[in-house]
Image (cartoon, rainbow, N blue to C red):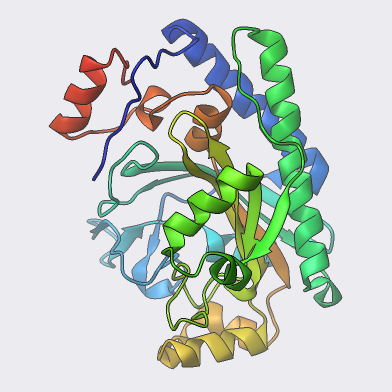
Length: 334
């Protein structure tokens, strides 16, 4: 756990302007994203039955908040994300190729390390879109990433017209690099240090191909084996000049097909998942081929409003060190 507020930091927005801007950013970005990617808004669950296998296991190590409802009698878990649920929803709602959905996803990640960018409360736009199997390639992935990046840039431009005091600047040209190429470029740094180094250089970067072990025998970052195709996924980063670090806004990817799912389950020793309804539907080619991801709502607000701590744009629960440091530095935590 690490909390850092640079000397002399002061938000350019007061509390009222901050709340107004949060609403403006969310409404504006949603409209741009849904139009650009042809997405329809839907309702989504806060929790699912654990045995359904639908919850996102993230890196495979975190555990979900769980409970047993009185009249249900089955263990339920708070979602970590809706990666699998969304693909099932596209199937159940009869979405067709070229169309998709998005929703507000709220979650509790009780084991999250708390720092300037991380909270135990997660809010993000979860989206998913039906694609043709022929579009399962890097070109299609990169074009979609560019669309999302352009939505972010356009939202920033609109925000700065509304609040001229905001001095946020984002790089307009997005740089693409694979996790292996990044390792080759910075072999003496660990994965997080590599992210920081490449963002200091290019300011806006999509790092792709995350999940497989790299040439050094280590992971850039571990990913669940049953939603993203590790060869066709990645994260969108921007450089935070306030914190001097890589600032992740979105994790996304083309989802597993029958071949990549079988291969990734085998690598992780989790072939037992083939018996779950969700997984068997993919293996039997019943679910549509899709692309999707999550875009942090509080993360995006924090980035565009040039804030130093995510607690400035979301209400959560914080440790005493965080609260004291922010108070001493004049940073108001919601």
